Length: 272
Image (cartoon, rainbow, N blue to C red; front, side):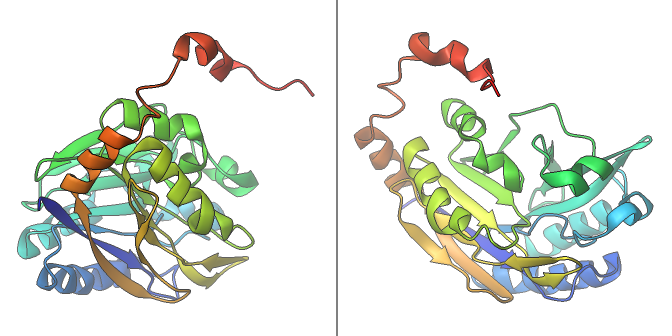
């Protein structure tokens, strides 16, 4: 069986915290994930600084290759595990809600900026990204990146499926009352697109938010391989490429599409 063992780090509680505290938690999680055979470790959205920062986001944001990113490269190399971490990215006078995939040798494999911003808070402090499709390959697995709200748009996930993404990684900060997203929507997204989705959420109260946890690895057959509860947890589960290939052969959604009928509809907006 060909598999990419993947760790999903939900928590710890009590963030936002200092970047130093977040990096210490990541070091510990990387060591544990590697000891359990993981080659990839995924954190939640804005893991580095915490999510509920208000206008202070710009004060703690760092460039994509800043000090924290270099520190994480060292963690990845020490434990031979690739890491996806969420953070606020400073680019000139703009701040992006971003995620970086660092390889198990410490090299940069991919950078992604959230394209669909959720709510007044995000739209007031972040600039949306303009690259909808970001991919990289790790141990022969094609990995794609989205962030939280992005995965709730079927077009974004379908674009990844058509581009060959096998594991879609989604750092997330999902709050109540939207528990249906990891419970119901994610397994459906994985099934209808024939891919694995690693959805890694924050947990517990933070500012005005109460994050629901429920991180999960959903398979291409719609079956959830691992799911966290409401508190801090490190899940480890396999992305089975044999199952993925078999499921794609049996699932006709991608091959039976008729884009000539509805391609232009994707750009329409519902009249109000």
